[in-house]
Image 1: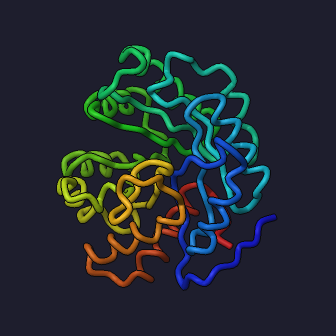
Image 2: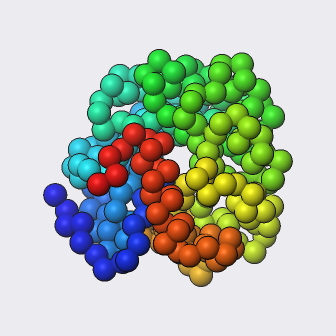
Image 3: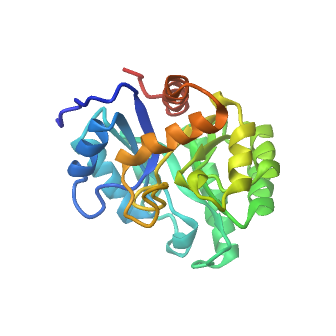
Length: 260
Protein backbone atom coordinates (compact mmCIF):
# COMPACT_ATOMS: atom_id res chain seq x y z
CA UNK A 1 0.00 0.00 0.00
CA UNK A 2 1.42 3.35 -1.00
CA UNK A 3 2.00 5.97 1.70
CA UNK A 4 -0.84 8.51 1.66
CA UNK A 5 1.17 11.14 3.49
CA UNK A 6 1.69 14.67 2.27
CA UNK A 7 1.81 18.21 3.55
CA UNK A 8 -1.10 19.77 1.66
CA UNK A 9 -3.69 21.29 4.02
CA UNK A 10 -6.55 20.50 1.61
CA UNK A 11 -8.10 17.23 0.48
CA UNK A 12 -8.78 16.62 -3.20
CA UNK A 13 -10.15 13.75 -5.25
CA UNK A 14 -9.43 13.55 -8.98
CA UNK A 15 -12.79 12.73 -10.51
CA UNK A 16 -11.35 11.63 -13.86
CA UNK A 17 -7.83 10.60 -14.80
CA UNK A 18 -6.07 7.98 -16.89
CA UNK A 19 -3.14 6.56 -14.92
CA UNK A 20 -1.27 3.26 -14.92
CA UNK A 21 -1.88 2.60 -18.61
CA UNK A 22 1.89 2.55 -19.33
CA UNK A 23 2.94 1.16 -15.94
CA UNK A 24 1.29 0.74 -12.55
CA UNK A 25 0.80 4.48 -11.99
CA UNK A 26 2.60 4.35 -8.67
CA UNK A 27 4.75 7.45 -9.22
CA UNK A 28 1.79 9.57 -10.34
CA UNK A 29 -0.20 8.40 -7.33
CA UNK A 30 2.68 9.18 -4.96
CA UNK A 31 3.09 12.68 -6.38
CA UNK A 32 -0.66 13.27 -6.28
CA UNK A 33 -0.90 12.20 -2.66
CA UNK A 34 1.90 14.57 -1.72
CA UNK A 35 -0.03 17.39 -3.41
CA UNK A 36 -3.19 16.64 -1.42
CA UNK A 37 -4.94 14.50 -4.04
CA UNK A 38 -5.91 11.58 -1.83
CA UNK A 39 -8.12 9.58 -4.20
CA UNK A 40 -8.23 8.94 -7.93
CA UNK A 41 -11.06 7.87 -10.24
CA UNK A 42 -9.18 5.99 -12.96
CA UNK A 43 -11.20 5.86 -16.15
CA UNK A 44 -11.31 3.19 -18.83
CA UNK A 45 -11.90 4.06 -22.48
CA UNK A 46 -12.09 0.55 -23.95
CA UNK A 47 -11.74 -3.02 -22.70
CA UNK A 48 -7.95 -2.89 -22.52
CA UNK A 49 -7.76 0.34 -20.54
CA UNK A 50 -10.71 -0.66 -18.37
CA UNK A 51 -8.77 -3.77 -17.36
CA UNK A 52 -5.70 -1.62 -16.64
CA UNK A 53 -7.81 0.78 -14.57
CA UNK A 54 -9.12 -2.21 -12.63
CA UNK A 55 -5.57 -3.49 -12.09
CA UNK A 56 -4.48 -0.12 -10.67
CA UNK A 57 -7.48 -0.08 -8.33
CA UNK A 58 -6.57 -3.57 -7.14
CA UNK A 59 -2.95 -2.52 -6.62
CA UNK A 60 -3.83 0.64 -4.67
CA UNK A 61 -7.05 -0.12 -2.75
CA UNK A 62 -8.92 2.72 -1.04
CA UNK A 63 -6.89 5.20 -3.09
CA UNK A 64 -7.63 4.30 -6.73
CA UNK A 65 -11.12 3.45 -8.01
CA UNK A 66 -11.88 2.31 -11.54
CA UNK A 67 -14.50 2.75 -14.22
CA UNK A 68 -15.17 0.52 -17.21
CA UNK A 69 -16.52 1.74 -20.52
CA UNK A 70 -16.00 2.47 -24.19
CA UNK A 71 -15.13 6.00 -25.34
CA UNK A 72 -16.94 7.20 -28.48
CA UNK A 73 -13.63 7.13 -30.37
CA UNK A 74 -13.50 3.37 -29.69
CA UNK A 75 -17.20 2.62 -30.25
CA UNK A 76 -16.44 0.51 -33.30
CA UNK A 77 -14.76 -2.00 -30.96
CA UNK A 78 -18.11 -2.73 -29.35
CA UNK A 79 -18.77 -3.56 -25.71
CA UNK A 80 -17.47 -7.11 -25.52
CA UNK A 81 -16.08 -7.80 -22.06
CA UNK A 82 -17.24 -4.56 -20.44
CA UNK A 83 -20.40 -5.88 -18.78
CA UNK A 84 -18.41 -8.67 -17.12
CA UNK A 85 -16.31 -6.06 -15.28
CA UNK A 86 -19.20 -4.12 -13.80
CA UNK A 87 -19.85 -6.49 -10.90
CA UNK A 88 -16.31 -6.06 -9.60
CA UNK A 89 -16.29 -3.94 -6.42
CA UNK A 90 -13.39 -1.84 -7.71
CA UNK A 91 -15.50 -0.69 -10.69
CA UNK A 92 -17.61 2.23 -9.49
CA UNK A 93 -19.04 3.67 -12.74
CA UNK A 94 -19.80 3.01 -16.40
CA UNK A 95 -17.81 5.05 -18.88
CA UNK A 96 -16.41 7.12 -20.15
CA UNK A 97 -18.95 6.93 -22.91
CA UNK A 98 -20.90 9.35 -25.04
CA UNK A 99 -20.57 11.09 -28.40
CA UNK A 100 -17.68 12.91 -30.04
CA UNK A 101 -18.42 14.36 -33.45
CA UNK A 102 -15.20 16.38 -33.63
CA UNK A 103 -13.06 13.53 -34.93
CA UNK A 104 -15.62 10.79 -35.65
CA UNK A 105 -13.02 8.06 -35.16
CA UNK A 106 -16.07 5.78 -34.99
CA UNK A 107 -19.15 6.39 -37.16
CA UNK A 108 -21.77 8.60 -35.47
CA UNK A 109 -24.46 5.93 -35.70
CA UNK A 110 -22.17 3.41 -34.01
CA UNK A 111 -21.35 5.96 -31.32
CA UNK A 112 -25.05 6.48 -30.63
CA UNK A 113 -25.74 2.75 -30.36
CA UNK A 114 -22.80 2.09 -28.00
CA UNK A 115 -23.69 5.10 -25.87
CA UNK A 116 -27.29 3.93 -25.47
CA UNK A 117 -26.11 0.43 -24.57
CA UNK A 118 -23.84 1.81 -21.85
CA UNK A 119 -26.69 3.85 -20.40
CA UNK A 120 -28.59 0.57 -20.18
CA UNK A 121 -25.63 -1.04 -18.39
CA UNK A 122 -25.56 1.80 -15.86
CA UNK A 123 -29.23 1.18 -15.11
CA UNK A 124 -28.80 -2.60 -14.97
CA UNK A 125 -25.88 -2.44 -12.56
CA UNK A 126 -27.09 0.63 -10.65
CA UNK A 127 -23.85 2.48 -11.36
CA UNK A 128 -23.08 6.13 -12.13
CA UNK A 129 -22.62 7.13 -15.76
CA UNK A 130 -19.58 9.11 -16.96
CA UNK A 131 -20.27 11.04 -20.18
CA UNK A 132 -17.87 12.39 -22.79
CA UNK A 133 -19.57 15.10 -24.87
CA UNK A 134 -18.01 16.95 -27.77
CA UNK A 135 -19.93 18.74 -30.53
CA UNK A 136 -22.94 16.48 -30.03
CA UNK A 137 -24.98 18.07 -27.25
CA UNK A 138 -28.42 17.80 -28.82
CA UNK A 139 -27.95 14.13 -29.67
CA UNK A 140 -26.60 13.32 -26.20
CA UNK A 141 -29.55 14.94 -24.45
CA UNK A 142 -31.95 13.21 -26.84
CA UNK A 143 -30.44 9.77 -26.13
CA UNK A 144 -30.47 10.40 -22.39
CA UNK A 145 -34.15 11.32 -22.61
CA UNK A 146 -34.92 8.25 -24.70
CA UNK A 147 -32.98 5.82 -22.49
CA UNK A 148 -33.70 7.61 -19.17
CA UNK A 149 -30.86 9.48 -17.51
CA UNK A 150 -29.26 7.43 -14.72
CA UNK A 151 -29.84 8.96 -11.30
CA UNK A 152 -26.11 9.59 -11.02
CA UNK A 153 -24.70 11.07 -14.22
CA UNK A 154 -21.72 13.35 -14.75
CA UNK A 155 -20.53 15.24 -17.82
CA UNK A 156 -16.78 14.85 -17.53
CA UNK A 157 -14.37 17.54 -18.75
CA UNK A 158 -17.32 19.85 -19.35
CA UNK A 159 -16.67 22.12 -22.33
CA UNK A 160 -20.14 23.49 -22.99
CA UNK A 161 -21.48 26.91 -22.17
CA UNK A 162 -24.22 28.17 -19.91
CA UNK A 163 -27.05 26.72 -22.02
CA UNK A 164 -25.58 23.22 -21.97
CA UNK A 165 -24.82 23.51 -18.26
CA UNK A 166 -28.39 24.51 -17.46
CA UNK A 167 -29.74 21.63 -19.54
CA UNK A 168 -27.43 19.14 -17.82
CA UNK A 169 -28.45 20.41 -14.39
CA UNK A 170 -32.14 20.22 -15.36
CA UNK A 171 -31.86 16.45 -15.92
CA UNK A 172 -30.06 15.95 -12.61
CA UNK A 173 -26.53 15.59 -13.96
CA UNK A 174 -23.35 16.91 -12.36
CA UNK A 175 -20.58 18.71 -14.21
CA UNK A 176 -16.87 18.01 -13.87
CA UNK A 177 -14.37 20.73 -14.75
CA UNK A 178 -10.78 20.25 -15.91
CA UNK A 179 -7.79 22.48 -16.57
CA UNK A 180 -9.65 23.90 -19.57
CA UNK A 181 -11.26 26.48 -17.29
CA UNK A 182 -7.81 28.03 -16.80
CA UNK A 183 -7.37 28.59 -20.56
CA UNK A 184 -7.81 32.15 -21.82
CA UNK A 185 -10.07 31.04 -24.70
CA UNK A 186 -12.51 29.13 -22.46
CA UNK A 187 -14.80 31.98 -21.38
CA UNK A 188 -18.02 30.09 -22.15
CA UNK A 189 -16.95 27.15 -20.00
CA UNK A 190 -15.87 29.45 -17.16
CA UNK A 191 -19.28 31.14 -17.35
CA UNK A 192 -20.88 27.71 -17.07
CA UNK A 193 -18.72 26.86 -14.07
CA UNK A 194 -19.82 30.04 -12.31
CA UNK A 195 -23.53 29.23 -12.64
CA UNK A 196 -23.27 25.63 -11.44
CA UNK A 197 -24.11 25.26 -7.73
CA UNK A 198 -20.96 24.29 -5.85
CA UNK A 199 -22.56 21.01 -4.73
CA UNK A 200 -23.21 20.05 -8.35
CA UNK A 201 -19.64 20.14 -9.61
CA UNK A 202 -16.57 17.95 -9.44
CA UNK A 203 -12.95 18.47 -10.48
CA UNK A 204 -10.66 16.43 -12.67
CA UNK A 205 -7.33 16.53 -14.43
CA UNK A 206 -8.21 14.19 -17.32
CA UNK A 207 -4.50 13.44 -17.12
CA UNK A 208 -2.33 12.92 -19.06
CA UNK A 209 -4.24 15.52 -21.08
CA UNK A 210 -5.17 19.19 -20.57
CA UNK A 211 -2.61 20.42 -18.07
CA UNK A 212 -3.84 23.66 -16.49
CA UNK A 213 -2.17 27.04 -16.84
CA UNK A 214 0.74 27.65 -16.17
CA UNK A 215 1.60 24.09 -17.24
CA UNK A 216 -0.43 24.07 -20.45
CA UNK A 217 1.18 21.94 -23.14
CA UNK A 218 2.96 19.67 -20.68
CA UNK A 219 1.96 16.14 -19.74
CA UNK A 220 -0.75 16.42 -17.11
CA UNK A 221 -0.84 14.55 -13.80
CA UNK A 222 -3.26 14.27 -10.86
CA UNK A 223 -0.80 16.30 -8.77
CA UNK A 224 -1.98 19.36 -10.74
CA UNK A 225 -5.59 19.08 -9.54
CA UNK A 226 -5.12 21.68 -6.75
CA UNK A 227 -4.31 24.29 -9.42
CA UNK A 228 -7.78 23.77 -10.88
CA UNK A 229 -9.38 23.95 -7.45
CA UNK A 230 -7.53 27.16 -6.66
CA UNK A 231 -8.66 28.68 -9.95
CA UNK A 232 -12.29 27.84 -9.26
CA UNK A 233 -12.07 29.25 -5.74
CA UNK A 234 -10.63 32.50 -7.07
CA UNK A 235 -13.19 32.82 -9.89
CA UNK A 236 -16.08 32.19 -7.51
CA UNK A 237 -14.70 34.34 -4.69
CA UNK A 238 -14.60 31.44 -2.25
CA UNK A 239 -12.08 30.16 0.23
CA UNK A 240 -10.08 27.24 -1.10
CA UNK A 241 -11.23 25.21 1.94
CA UNK A 242 -14.86 25.72 0.94
CA UNK A 243 -14.24 24.37 -2.55
CA UNK A 244 -12.10 21.41 -1.47
CA UNK A 245 -14.49 20.32 1.28
CA UNK A 246 -17.59 20.50 -0.89
CA UNK A 247 -16.02 18.80 -3.90
CA UNK A 248 -14.63 16.07 -1.64
CA UNK A 249 -18.10 15.40 -0.22
CA UNK A 250 -19.89 15.59 -3.58
CA UNK A 251 -17.51 13.21 -5.35
CA UNK A 252 -17.63 10.60 -2.59
CA UNK A 253 -21.41 10.75 -2.50
CA UNK A 254 -21.69 10.50 -6.29
CA UNK A 255 -19.64 7.31 -6.49
CA UNK A 256 -20.73 5.84 -3.16
CA UNK A 257 -17.18 5.91 -1.78
CA UNK A 258 -16.59 6.12 1.96
CA UNK A 259 -15.13 9.59 2.66
CA UNK A 260 -12.49 8.46 5.16
